[in-house]
Length: 432
Length: 143
View 1 (tube, chains in turn cyan, red):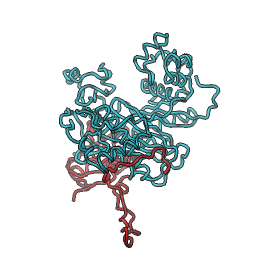
View 2 (cartoon, rainbow over the protein chains, first blue to last red):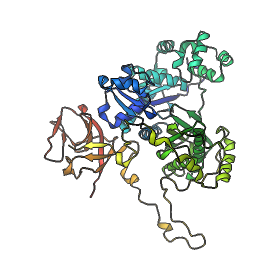
View 3 (cartoon, chains in turn red, purple):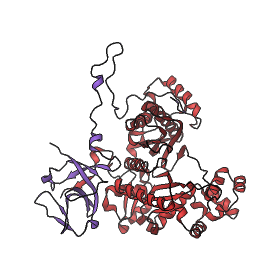
View 4 (cartoon, helix red, strand yellow):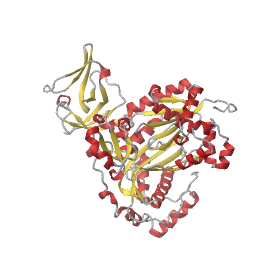
């Protein structure tokens, strides 16, 4: 499947992601949960968002409402936990910081997954994958799987295969698989299993006789672009081994929002990064307000360039916000917690923030003044507008976010302690 | 400055974490005499945490480690990345619980000891039968 025209430089992409992230984070501090069916519930304890393998084996589907699971808790010996975003945010930033030590090219893709640029022979890269897996397990305490391939789409697929095939021990290198095995896998998996292919797309693809991933890989990219979109064409090309999915700058996940960007000129001082962080915080604020959401946890991160492997630095920080908020001032403040972690003089080419623990703000979006954050040129003007309207450092904006937050009413009856972010809730070790 | 995006910064007031700053120069007078000697305050993180990805703080519950100067309610700094050695104070998983013990690796086997004669030793056939969660590096003893 690999593109025979392109010279093989040994550059590959590794997708590292934490297995059943929320459940694994809970288990890292509560070993009694090991081996038991465990579900982590969404905000307000609504439904199961993460299931441990044991819970999956019981046939509990993702998104299963808690009221349907609750009556069978005893029978199953099942444990449920409310979402502990402070904990997940901190574990996530530890994982990302650690991953940054293994590659000078890191793209935080979501709270529990990152793409790494790697280089080497298939054997070396398999070895690296196992090293990374062991290091995350040992240092942070959570299990990961690693998928390695020539493109992001194939790295995702390799990762999926690593997860579902115990024989691989959590690491799969696409190039190290026999061609027949790759084809058999792609023939067996439906296109819906593919990264970036949504459900409604699947129906239309099926209409054209494209059912399996292999069908799509064998499709004509030009025809796919004509019938669908350039996005799906890229997927086809990536399946054929041509890397063409660029870094994304803004992503909205199920329960997180990420803003990140590479800079054309590196940033070397905290003062400059402070500005960048401020922009992302404003963007996140605008985005949250638009969707009527507030966030409780913010992660901020920065990274150095892969062209400069000598001075690598991947500082990260997790901040628990005093209240759920979409307020730009609070988010900005929180993002600045990254600044003391910078190494002055090192060239950072990438930075971003991620907000998690999102919940409805329970009131009308208070900041209509924010426009589309895609228009980066508009941001300066927006901020000027705001300062003009509310005054520099105005607390008026802050109040909009602080007042009437629905935090008190949030049901989290099965919340574990905030083991790593709250001094009063440290893990207890038995001295007996 | 050379950043692709160059917006106005909203004044966010003081940062959530206080950043180390040196004494401010007096605008119209002499510089503070302390200026040249100020290297920043002692940062406990820098001295107590070797690796931020693998270090956790835990709290002790019980008196079985009194002999090691580790009391009920003390906080411990635990590094998960360290290899446990003979004599290490470790956090081991026993019956699904994080438990603090002193690890003894001898020719006759592996023993988890309390530093308090009231608690018996626990013999383990082999180190691989044991889940060591982390190795304690410091005790923040309440005096």
